[in-house]
Every structure is written in structure tokens, then in C-alpha cells.
Length: 352
Image (tube, rainbow, N blue to C red; front, side, top):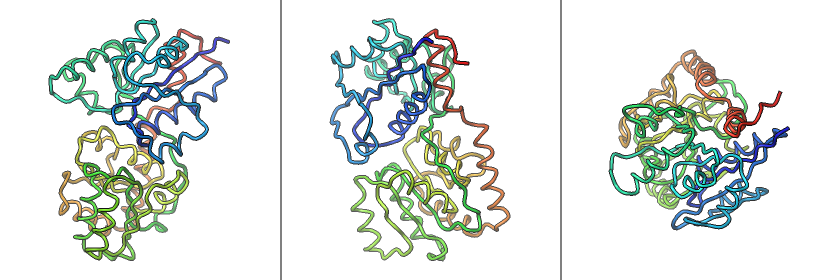
């Protein structure tokens, strides 16, 4: 049996987010294959600072940390590998992969702006060096390849380890948010909308999970404005996150940042929890046909959706909950895709 040695290279600021969750999920899945060996290389970007959330999630992992440029550990790890799986398109890693004639796959998570700066041109050049490019949404793909799709390019929605479970629709209550507490993720817009909405706060509580620079400001605003019904949990483990999501009636995902995809919406739909989202980037793809949608950065419009969700009758809600989960299964690539792709790129026979 030919062993396939894979290095997954992921630039990181040091915070735990969707890309980090995706990398860990792939590594955990493909390691269960007896013929695949995986190493994770975290490429520290400028101002990298390892945050407690990421540090917790990396416990037990043998991580290779590298810096930009001709980092010796990065070079040696690429030379060791049969396949390089790069997150986004940093040019140095792409060039080293080509220098050592290693098959290169890129998962491209972030949309490409129209700005023609030297940095953007370098990223586009790096992407052209990849043997295969896997874009996490149609929105992202269209910004990188707007006119003609390259051979080897396709849409492959990025996944983490999806939570499991199901709570009967009639036993659920309220709204839930999870994400980074930064302005462009919309937590401040959500808080404004919740304060505006005419809701029974006991029947329709709001649970906020995650952490970030806006934590103190959100806490202060809740107390100052005396907004009832809000629970702040901060950073939570995977079990707590899954439990809170599956017991909520709606997941609220309200960014205003040209969201590349929307992993939290996928996690909620996998548990049968429909979404309230903004029409932002690739998020409508992630939220699915049964989501309630409003413009980004519009508290009044979002408040109207919260009220609409609260008025929805039980039969209609139960239908959306069931169908959003069923339809998700047809939209995603199984995570086993990566093991098959690594073998194919390395030219190794599939395992029977």
C-alpha cells in the first residue's frame, strides 16, 4: 500500500475561526485512513497572536509553526510531502510546492477584490500555479474567475466537524448567534435589532456565543439599555455550541462583510435549525432556500425578520426545519472527498 503524505498549510492570525476548524476537521478525517499521513503547518501572518480559543482547539495536535518567506521548517515539510493542501493562495508556499514538484491543491476561502494591487496580482499568480482550486462558494469562485473557469477549479463548500442531534421543533425556543465579536460580523446590528423587535423576551431569548473585541461594548450596551432576554456565553466548547444551537428555533447570521460562505449557517441547518441571514456575499448559499433574508447592516429590517420568525405558525416552522436539513445533504461534498483527492493528486491507487 502506497502511503500518501499530506501537508495542510494554513495562514493564521492566531484566532480560532472557520478556516482553523476546517483544517482540523480534514486532518481528523483523513488520519482515519491507514494509507494517509497528515501534518498541519500553521503559517504565522503579520501580528500573529495565539488566542486562547485556538490554543484550546489545537491541544493534542503536533503543529508545525512557520513564518513568511524561506522558513526552513516550511521547506522541509513541503519536501517531505506527496501533496500540499494550501488554504488560500500565499505565493511563497505555492512557489515552494512547485519548486519541489509537489502536487498543489488550494482551498480558497476568501473573495478576491477588484483592486489591482501588486499583492492581489501575486495571489492570482499563486492560484494559477495550483493543480486544483477548490472554492468554498460560488460567490468566492466568481470573484477569482469571473469570466472563464479554469480547468481544475470547482466549488467545494468548506466544512468543519458538523454537530449532530435533533430537538423537536415544538421544544425549541429563541434565537442563537455564534461568531467573532467584531463589527462586520453583525453582532452589534443583531443586538440593535433585538432591542427594536416587539418580542416576548421569555419566549424569544437571544443567546450570544463567541468572543472578540466587541465583548465589553456588547456587555455594556445590554446593561446600559436594559435589554432583557440576552444571554452572553462567550467562547464555548463544541458540545455546548451544538446543544445551544439545536435547542434554538433560529440561527441568526447577520454579517455585513461580503461573507465568503457561512459555516455557522451550515452547522445550524445540519441540526435542522433554519437561519435568519443577511444578503451578504456567499451567505445566501449557506443559509439555503428556507432562510429569512434581509439587507446587511439594517437593524430595522433584521428586527422585522425576528418578529416574522416569532409569528410563524408551528406547521410552517416544522416544515422549514425538516427541509433545510434534508436539502443541505444534497448541497455538500462529503468530507471523504479530501482523502480521495489527495490519493488522486499523488497518483496513488484508491483504497478498496
